[in-house]
Image 1 (cartoon, helix red, strand yellow):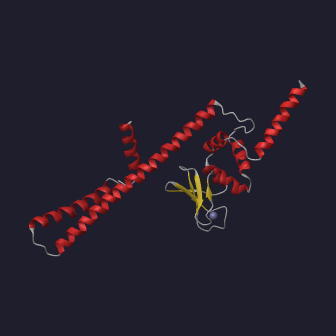
Image 2: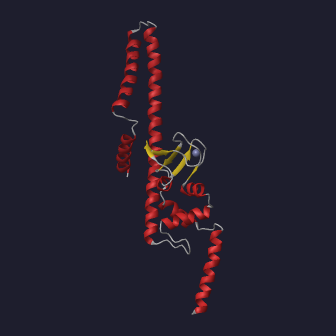
Image 3: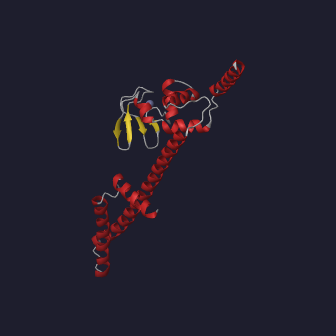
Length: 221
Ligand SMILES: [Zn+2]
């Protein structure tokens, strides 16, 4: 019995040595990354305030007078526009604690209550990680949708703008073809109407885009 216990513990130790060298399983790293919140890890060292979709504060890695340090809770990354440091939650812990990647994994897994040694994800953890990943994938898809939507609005706006400029040039040049003149006024009106619509319906507002996206994706599904 004692012999078995010794044997198990010695195996455990060699596994521990291997892990200290940084040989964590990908699954463990992914799980720790998924359940750790960068805004929480950074928030312990930086006073963060909301600014749009980001949180900003004074960088803890250089002498920062203005808030150059930005955290994106959606993307779970940070970046300092002053000193250029940036990355995910592991990078933040490494930079902050001046420690190795392996130590950062150990520290964050301890906080998340995940046992590093002999890591076997529980059904509960696997489900949680899957749900978090799904949510983040969804956010990424939403972001792509927003970029496409804003691009499309921009393209239409520019194209109507070009037509309106042509039309205005015609109108000020004193052209006297009533048919062309009517079309020119039409082009100017279409441009102004679209501009007013973008403004009135807040087509570029992220909340409006989100509503549209949710509606669209559920209708499509
Ligand atoms: Zn910095």
